[in-house]
Structure formats: C-alpha cells, structure tokens
Length: 337
Length: 172
Image (cartoon, rainbow over all chains, first blue to last red; front, top):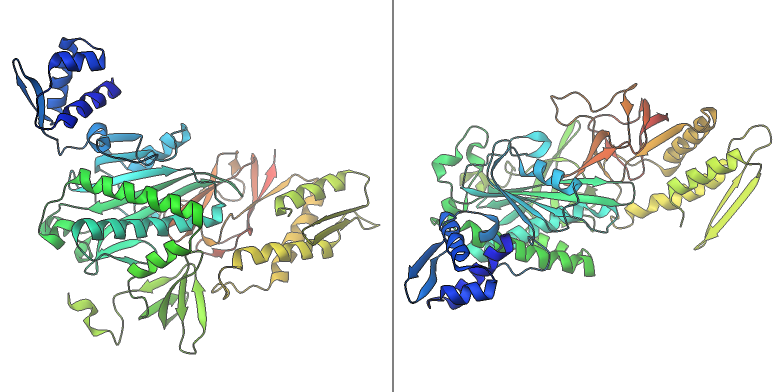
C-alpha cells in the first residue's frame, strides 16, 4: 500500500508540469483506474495538490507541508538514514517510541518523528518544550559496531552535523555549546539527547533524540521552562522554514558524517566540532564539587571530553563538570544580546 | 588481549578445578594465575599486571588525568582483588556490574525519583540498575544477571571509570 503510493507520487513528480494519464498510471502500477482514483483522494487528504483533467490525466501541483512518512521520505536520497520513518502526530516523547521500536528490531537508521511531544525529554528528565508543528522533534535509531565507550563521540558528531546542516540551510552561524547544544546568537535553538542500551563491550542500540526549534515566534518561546535562552530559526532569520526540507538536509548530512566517522574515526569530526565550538580559546568558569575556577577552553579530546588550560598552562580533560558559559568575568559582551 | 570479564571467568573456572597454575600469553602481556597453598585465593600480582594494562586503554587518547578521579591504578586494582576474594567466599555467586564507559553515575532516572535499585533489590537480566552519563549520552545499565543487589558501590553523581564496579549482585 505504502509503496504503491510512493511509486504513484514518484511517477507524478517525475512529470512535473505535464499531465500523466490514468491509464498509464494504472499500467505502471498494475492497479485499476478506480484504485488510482482512490489513491489520489488519499494523497489530497495528506495535503498533496493534484489536478485531474479529463482526457489529459493527473498532475501534481503542490506537496504538503504536513509531515507524514510519505512526505518526509519523498526526495530523500539516503542509503540507510531515514529509509524507515515512523511518524506520529502526538507522542509523549519520540525517545520512548524509538526505544520500543529498537527493542522490536527496528533497523539501523530508523527515524521516529512527531508533530508534537507532550513530555519531550531533556537532560535528567528536564522538560523539552515541543510545540505542535513548530519544530522538528525526532529520534534516530543507530546500531553501531563500536565499543560502548566510544559512543559519546556520536553525540558530538550529531552536534557537528546539526551545526553544519543548519548553517548551510539557513545562512546562520550556529555554534555548539559543549557537549552538544546548538546555539544561534548565543541562544539555544536545538538540543540533543542520546540514550544507549549496551552491554560491557557491545552496543545494542543508540537512540539519538533531536529537538529543533523552527517556526516558533519569539513570544512562543518565553514559556517558563525555557525562559530567555531559547530561540528558533524563525526568530533568528525572520522566515518560516519547511520542516521537510530541514529534516532531509539534517538526515542526509548525518548519514554522510556517520559513514565517514565509521570509516575514518573521530579526528575529522573533532575538527569540525571545534570549528563550531562556543567559547573555544576563551575563558570559561568551571564549577566542581566545592570550588569555582577559570580556565581557557582549548577544545575537545579524542573521546570528546572538554580540554581546558589552567593559568599554569597545564591541560586538563573534563568528562563531567558544570560550566558557566555565559557569565564570564572579563568577557563583558556576552550577556548584552 | 583478555577482557576483565574473561579473566574473571578463568579465575572462577580455575578455582573450581584442580589446576594450581595457569599462564596465558598474548601480545606481550602475560597473565599468570596461581592458587596459594592454604586457600583458593588468587595470586594478586598477576591480576595487578593485567588490570594495569586494561587501565591504560581508556586514558590513552586523553593525555591528562580525569579530574576528581586521579586514582592511582593500584588502588583500583585492590578493589578488583578484594572482589575476587569475596567471590571465593560466596561460592562464586557474586557478580559485579561494571561501568562500560567513563561518566557520571546516576542511581535514579531524575533527581526527584527513587533510585532504580537499592541493596536488597531483586533484579533480572533486563532490569535497569543505573545510568552512566557522559557528554549527554545516557547509558542505561542493565543487570545482565538475575539475583539480588548486595552492594551499591558508587554514589549518585560520582564520576566512574571504565570498568569500575558499580554493583554487586548475588546470583540466584
């Protein structure tokens, strides 16, 4: 069923402005002309604009903005990323659905995407605000043959991919706040949360959750939970963006970067990450158990940890620390935005 | 090279057998296991050597030591040995759940929630016992055996090392 529809969309789209006859479609797809007609009605319901003229046939004049498995996949030229898409209108969290799908053997590259999340997951179950139809909320299932301790590299890779794709797509200058928040003009535009099921030396699966604010107005971002540090692509560019095009750009960029990483290792990804790194070569405040101190943020290590240089010139690697990114002394302009 | 789990397995097998000495050599690393005369405890020296090699692995890429966790290798090795001894006492029923990566240990899914497990909790293979987080990657650790938690070895919020024991489980 699904694939007949995809083929039908494919045939129509190939012809662009020309009509294609119902007879030809029925021959190509090996279904009756009345079945074609039913499919056309279904497509219209999904938001496709289709013109039908007697003696000429059908042509497609518009694609829907509404997300569906079909529209998201249409035009996506990837080998494995997003070749299986599970789309839901409203979910508690795409992460939960993705975990369930992964436990039921969903293949590497499966995407779970929703128009709306009621309980979007943030770090340590902090809420991620996911308004209906205003952003991209999706989870990507991966089954890498990596040692579990290398897995954190994948979350940094995802951040680099997002920064890369968003920068090119929207002509903005995204930065990555370690380890993986995407900032535009120093406000958070996207977040990544990764969950893994692994044994001691084998990863069963990884679910990478991505939340990207796209078409929210500034007023919609002032909800209590996200306060003033949040932004959307619309706020930053003054434009509405097509979710489908953004999604496909991200997924395509991800597949390339991931395949490259599996083939060549982390070092190029690390360089890319650092090129987007927020506050690289600047002073940051580090809070550990009972003291605050300052150090210069030098970049990330091969395993993605934070590398800082203290005032004695000694390098240190931090795996876990609270960093005060925005309130640096001697760095006056940071909060004036 | 042998993994720490494999060494554990070998120790257990030797313990149950009448073998008194066992040597394994690969890639320039030699593991020698000997039973002492009085008891069945394992020669510590050999384990130390192996554990040290294992220890180097995760740190190789990051030159400086991990903050707040500059444990000298011998300290940790002693933990392993202690465990091996207790293993013997408990008729090899004790299983250790170890951390698969460097990261922060979380005993509960969120600060307000109850811990996944506590001492005395019954677990099976798929029971989630904790989360280890590094760079916003949350690793839900499963027990991998069924039994009862006899000891929680890490504290909520503690930075744990690759291979560090997190729980002891008394197998059913």
